[in-house]
Length: 267
Image (cartoon, helix red, strand yellow):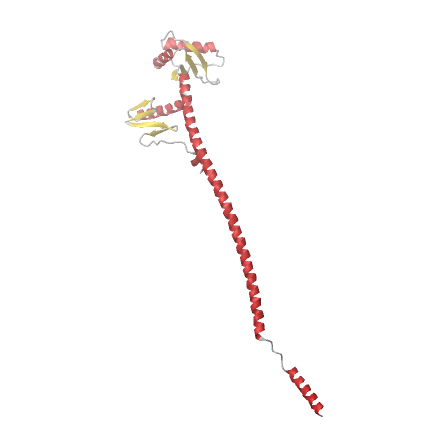
């Protein structure tokens, strides 16, 4: 009887235990959550550290690249300065050589004169050309004992046009004497218009043409004018005009220009 009661109580207690839910330890659950959070934070920190490391490496790489670029720029800047100095020196040398060539060219032309308007024909021989010049000097300029070294036509023959004749005299004195008498050609009784000019380089001929045009314009307007070939200018009513870059400029507005430097050209 006593055993029966014990068994019944045990059975009853087992039923009670089955009906009571098992409760988990809250501290254990909180500890697990904190562990997960720490793991996530650690992973995040590791990722951030890795990203910062990559950014730092990239900055270092770009800094190195920028330093290399700056070094190259400095080297090129130094090289450009050296080139600029060299080009400036070459400009000066070219200018000196150009002036020297002009001087030599003028020296070679000192014994020459150009005869314009002398009758021309396609079959003209050198002797015929020489005789025409000789006759002009003796008959129209009334000069004798003038020695001609060479004479020849310039350019190719064109129908209806008289080619200029370049005449080289043996002595400068003969050349200067012929040039001094050239105004007699304007007074002679001859319908043919013959002129005698100096043998000048193209740039000087162009400049003098500008001066003569300005002189003619001043005369038409009734203004006093005078050409100064030595100074390459014409004075009109007290105002001086200079030839600059194949143009006439008033001396009051003319500016001195210089060729651009190498640095200015590349900018």
